[in-house]
Structures are given as C-alpha cells and as structure tokens.
Amino acid sequence: MARSTVSAADAGSTQESSGRTVAALWREAVGEPRTRPAYLIERDGGWQEVSWDEMARRVDDLANGMLSLGIRRGDPVAILGRTTLEWVQVDLALALVGGIGVPIYPNSSSDECRYILDHSGAVGIFVDDAVRPPALERTGKLAYVVPFDGLDRLAEQGRRHAAERPGVLDETVGALDETDVFTYQYTSGTTGPPKACVVQHRSYVEMTRAAARLPGLIEGEEVVLLFLPLAHNFGRLLHLAGAHVGFTTALLSDPLRVRDVLSDVRPTLLPSVPRLYEKMQAAVQEQFAEARGVRRRLVDWALAVGYRASPYKQRGAALPRALALQHHVAHRLVYSRIKERLGGRLRAAISGGAPLAKEVGEFFLALDIPILEGYGQSECTTACTVNLPGQIRFGTVGRPFPGFEVRTAEDGEILVRGETVFAGYLNDEEATRQTLDADGWLRTGDVGWFDADGFLTLTDRKKDIIVTAGGKNVSPQNLESALKGIPLVSQALVVGDRRPYVAALLTLDEDEAGKWAKERGWSVDFGALSSSPELRDELQTAVDRVNDGLARFEQIKRFAVLPRDFSAEEGEVTPTLKLRRRISEQHFAAEIERLYGGDSAASR
Image (cartoon, rainbow, N blue to C red; front, side, top):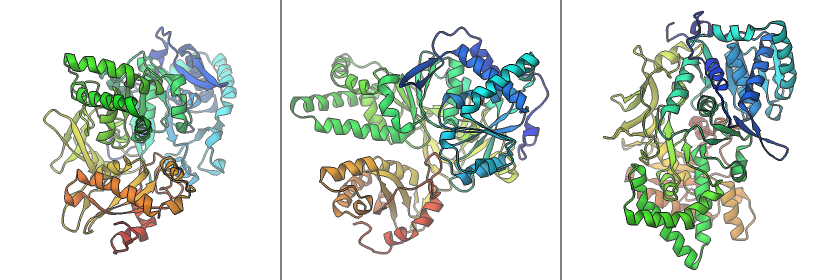
C-alpha cells in the first residue's frame, strides 16, 4: 500500500489475525480472571458496578447484532454520543466485526456531523439521543440509525443471530488482520475542514501496550474517572487501556460535574485537559486566601515545605530527613485535606490536549499531587512523550515513550516514527504526502526542542508562529497558556504577525468574573464587565505579571476584553475547544485593528 493514498480496502488483508487487533485485545482482557469491576456508571442516583463478564456478554451480543444488520469488515460506522457505557460497548463491538469506527464529538454541529458522515462514507450511525443533531436521518447515505436506547433490541437480535449461526462471530474475529483499519480519527480542524486519520488496529494496540509499560503511569488497581470525550484519541486510548491493564473506569457523561462526583468515585488517576486543573488551582487558592491567623500561617508554611520538596519529587529522589518530617506533618495538616476534596485517593493526574502552565504543575506538586503532562496527536494514535512519577520536568511534555523514535528537524519541527504512526489521511493524497515522508517519519507540524536529559519542550505550531514587524519569532500558544492561567480569563488569542508588537484578545471566565462582580455588589452582565475600568485594571495587573517573565518582544503590549467567549457555534473553537485562529481573527477583526490603531479603550 502506498502511504500517499489510503482507503479502507487498501489497509486490510486476508491473512490470519496476528493478535495485534483491538478485537484480540478485548478477547484476551475478558478471558482473564478479574474480580475488580470493569466500569462504574451512574444509575438510580448512585454509582453501579459493571463486571468484565457482563461487558463481554453485552459486547458479543451487540457484535452479533451488527452482523445481523449487515455490518461487515471495512464498513465505516459512526458513533455520536457522550462518554457513556453504550459508547464503549458499540466501539468494542465494531472492533469485533471489523467495522471502522468513525467517532463524532457530542458537541459537534449539524454541519460538522454532515461533513464527517459524508467524507467517511459511513453506512450507519449509533447515536445518543441526548446529543442527536436535528435532521440526522437526512445526513449522509445512512443505511440505518441506531439510538443508544435501542441497543437492548439490537442485543436481542444478536442473540437470535448467534443461535442461528453459531461460531460466526469467532470466525469474523479470527479473520481480522492487524493492518485492518480500526478507526477514522478526525482531527480538530483548527486550520480548515477536519482530516480523517486512518489508524490501523496494530497502531492502537501498540499504543495501548506502550502506555501500560510506562512505570507509574497506569496501574491495574486504578480507578480512573473518565469524562473526556471518547471521540478524542486520548479518551479512546484510556477505555482500551482499561481493558488491557484491567483497571476500573468510571464513565461520566457530563464534564461539568467532575468536581461534584470526585467524592463518590474517589479516583486514583484523573486524566484531563489543563483547564480543569487551572480551575481547581483557582478554587484552592481562593480557599487558602480566606484563611486567617494561625490557619493562614500553617497554609503558607505547608506550601513552602511543598515547594522545597518539589525538586526531589520531580527527579524521584528521597527527601532529606528534616524535610521529610516536615512534609509528613504538612501532609497530615494541609495536603490531605485538599486531596480529600478530590476523593482522597488521587495518586496522579494526567494532562494533555493543550499546554499546561508550569505554575499550575508546580502548585499541585507542592500539594503532593503530581500532574503528568504528555504530548501527541491523532496522527501518532495518541501520545509519544510523557512525564512520569519521579521523572517530571515542568514546562516540558516529558520524554519519548520507549521504542518510539522522536527527534527534531533542522527547523525544530518534531518528527515521530513507529508503529503507532497512522497510515495516512483518508482520500487526501497531497496532505498525506506532506505529513508522512518516504522513511515513515511523521511531520507533526509542532516545533520544539530536547534538553540534555531528553525532555521535550514544545514551542508552538509551525504555522502559528508569529513573526513581528521587527523580525522576532513569538510562540502564541505559550503566551496564551500563561494568560489562561489568570483566574478571570477563559480564553486568550495572541496576535501580532507582521505587527509592531504583540497583543491579545481575552474572554472572561463566567464563574470567576461572576464571583468578582458579586463581591462588588454589581450585576453579572458580561457585556458591561468587559468594558469595566476596574476589571481592566485587575486584568492589567495580571497581564503585567505574565509579562515579567518574558523578553520585551514577547510581552503583551495591549489587550482587549471581548463581550463573549469564543464559540463552537460560531466556528471559533473546535469540539475540543481548540481555537480556530483564522476564523476568530476574522470575527474580531475590528477589535484587533483597534489594538493597533491607538484606541485607548483597548488597553493601557
């Protein structure tokens, strides 16, 4: 198969399965004697356990039901839904019959759904009615639309099919090959229509095995709270890693309720995006700020101890005896109380999808909660580098996974090679040729550098780097990450390409800005708040703190506060909340021009 032209037919073969298929991974998982629950799901006001045996029967029934519908090896089938048990069951059942999963984000617009269904050639869709877009039946050439609440009927149909044709599912699983396509993983589409990454079974299996081999990253006794969208490659990897490793996955369909369920689920591992940790940090700091007298002195002392202990913890070294004793006392009196708010068992958190501000990671490690930041993209299946317990360097995305080849080109672009690299873009020969070279290296489009110890620091997206009128290169994503660390700020867009200086558009965090307004007895009107001189002064002070650590040419000289957040409905952010820069800049062109036109309303 030529890498530059990829189709479902090209990617498969008729060889006997080599064992590196998701179907084989699942069958091996449920064939092991496991006593811990496979999943925790919310039901009847509480959390209910789902066993591995129960999941095995359900997935087999649904797979047989899919065969009865006529789904065959190589058929693209879409899944549109929240992070639920039904999504996982459909995904695994499709893997058993050889269908190609086409995940769609639950917050995707009707236009985005239509594009993916048409582009992928999906023959059908399994859909969660809670997020079902209007007129779905008229979208694409769908032979069937199966709602999640219709899965019981499909499972019953599958049992009848298995009784009439015993052994047919086993034969189907045995015929699968590691080079068969497991999924069309659509990219975020920050620079145009999303592209479909063709990811083979062996790539996801190798990705899952690689993650399981990393010391201290995921363990068999874990309880993982998973609220990330399963349409994202990170969420997909975690549900497959749960099967491979045997940990328990608590599935939460509403990401806004994470803090509400922590005390019930009591996770040991929390994967998330940086925004959650930023909000958690703001909440903890607010609690600390309210402390008075002896309590405040105790908090300040415990934080100082935590920061002194941090360098030892980052490199996995034992604390000196005196510091170890102080840390033990600080943990009992302060850290443990913070951890109790997070369920009381949190061993570590994982961050991905966007840059994590160095200050956020340092703060949580000072509270004895390591946040392990990693890096990857859909084109390499999920991740290729990660920080690990005892191997943490803040401001970096860690070291490469063992067995992965990761290096930088002369211009700093990060290159990746290995079995997790995708097979190419569906129906896009030119984009595939630009991304995969003849030697199998993936050009990520990201720029970065390795330090002497092999830790990778990301600079920015190659296409996003700003070149000022003075010829200075500025990395907007790093600046935006720092600006989003300001509690009042929800999103930040840094501009300045071919301009005399760097400027920014800021949007307000509803919770923090609302709290700020109520403390002053004001009404919570975000349109009015965005032009409030008092709020602008507070933001200016925070922006000045960000600027203190920057070179002059990188500093934010002016900023504007927008009356609303960047919106997925307006096409300004992707379903994973990544900024679509060009669209956002077009929509707020007038505000940007004022930043460079001398209008004093923009900023001091």
